View (cartoon, rainbow, N blue to C red):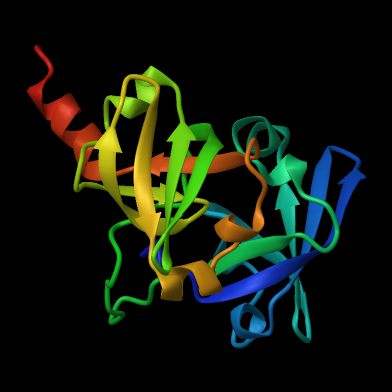
Amino acid sequence: MFTGIVEELGRVTALEQIEGGWHLGVQGPLAAAGTALGDSVAVNGVCLTVEHVQGPRLRFGLAPETLLRTNLGDLRAGDPVNLERSLPANGRIDGHFVQGHVDGTGVLVGREVDGDSLRCAVQADPALLRYIVPKGYVALDGTSLTVIDVLPDRFTFMLIAYTRQHIALPLRAAGCRVNIEVDILAKYAERFMAPR
């Protein structure tokens, strides 16, 4: 489990196709520190298993399903990525419960400077928007964010100055895909309330 508080802005070193899947290489000294084989690290909000550690570099295996459901297949060497190690049992939850199980992708369709903050909009499938509420949580590329408003085809949120400096989203162009993980509590509530 993760919190959506990005620990480090890493850099992609490689995305290589291998027999049966893909390897993703990332440089992230903080994320690599104390990380062992088999540990979980969220890369752009996707929970991945560490397959190799060498100094500040990590390597992960990607299944075809991961590439289909996330934006990891869009990455190129040098691209920035959000990194967060899994939450230890005695850790502090500053964001919200993030599983690293991406529900789908959306498209960054708007950005507007508002003082030292950035107002953003992401277009998303209505099947995902049903779980997103104003003043609720959403994880975008693994970043825990508070939703401002939900419209029929998109939702909006703000990035404060500190967040803008520590995550990958402000460095990405309009039209790029972003990973969306809705608040798991919304999905549990729907399941609990469903007729049986």
